[in-house]
Length: 281
Image (cartoon, rainbow, N blue to C red; front, top):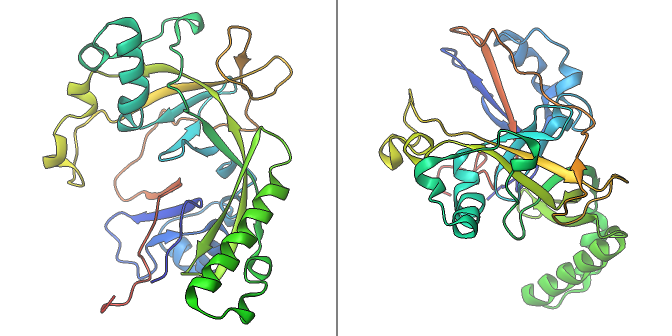
């Protein structure tokens, strides 16, 4: 089994075009697909969408279990409705006694933005390092699969400990392609993330599971959050003195929209993909 776990990937959606290379790809893999991508209609600079740490990919963030993106220079974040209903909406419904699932939520001012649910964070990737050699160090001396597993886990813990030099950062070591390679991902964790807008559940979940993964869809599956930091630009939990976070970059929303047969590419942090499984697997 070959998996890519929680690393930013690009999903190529070629409208009305049959393309053998459609699917999920890491940004660094895109140059190898240059011919196919351009044939599918992309006419921009491929280098700009191949670098995770430059615009526009550096505007894409993770909520831990969902993808999101900065859409303003004042820390405004767009994500899916279903990414906030089980945490932000439930937490603030319990806190205020109002049924936000029924009414939805709109903060008309910054002061009215609702606090994040406990543990909610925005993760901004800072660095990705290939640590395959370090993770597999000593495994050639393992006496069993269980022993090999313990060696790998011990090596991972050491790498993570050395990486997390500040409480602002969280690091994790992920296996790619079933242990063929290991990548250490260093992330800035913003701990004050407030609810700005969420539609009523009747809009955010319109169609329910019947319409899920069916197209065209008519659900308003989106919500807005805002990330906050201290006046010194440090990450900390919810505090009245915190100010909106200023991201390095943010996406610009097109007023024109898309047209039929336009090239479409989606960037995000999927949980896992089985894209490279063989038929028997």
